[in-house]
Image (cartoon, rainbow, N blue to C red; front, side, top):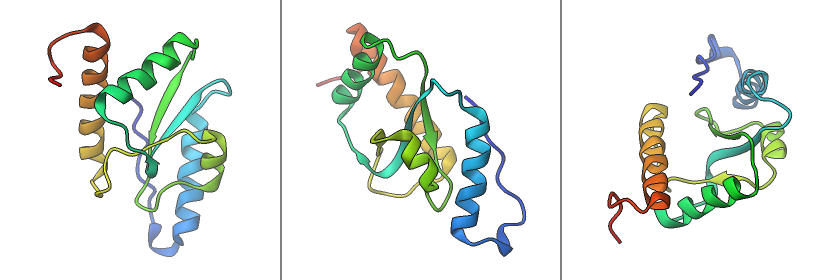
Length: 124
């Protein structure tokens, strides 16, 4: 997990300028071969079992680096939407802090891998 520090002195920046600065910082952390998935409110909202299948497809297709990105308070810069192609995932229609999304997402990763291993963590 890589946490990029918040942008400082945002009072004088428009939301678009903030998104561009965040995208610049995020892009520095990415490799050209990374497959990125944006955690975005407009993304698909799968059930846990479907998310496990999504991860399994990437593993079976040989995806080397699947990178999930949590955006800033204004969402993502267009450059990241272009880079992600159509890889967007929504954890909820509600809005949460970055700290909460990290926690929810790690739990969903754990749940997805438990499902794939056939462990009893997920009840359905």
